[in-house]
Image (cartoon, rainbow, N blue to C red; front, side):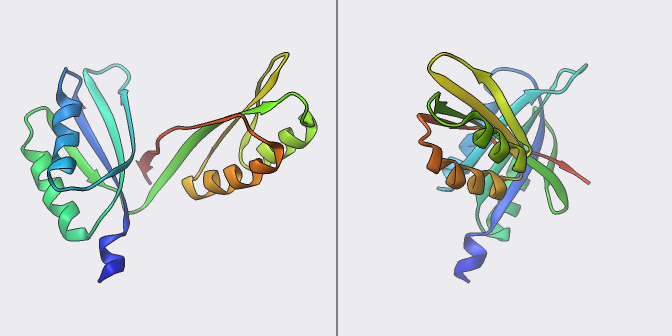
Length: 159
């Protein structure tokens, strides 16, 4: 029963792009005491809509309740609890310039990424991959003494 409570869930919500919609959507999770692990919002090209992708943990029953409540919000047009999906997450990592550029480049390439920028004092790498692989990249990158790690939210689309 404990595993059912902690299952990872990804939900997409298509909403009218207007003020306070995001606050109303996230308040449904807060009201039930569920944390949002990642939240990504972007406008849908050539429309007045936005796509919200929410990653959370919870039971199927709670996610069903949240989905039903989301459908009741006026600016919500569609709610999808993803089952079969393609999902990606991005991470930017700042390394000291003293680290070997070729080693960092090879590590990034192994995780669908590369060197995004090189300055006088630092190297910035970018990787976009599945969330579990992003975590593995972050763990592997620790050997190169990163200054800073900025992890983006999950984006998902159904197959």
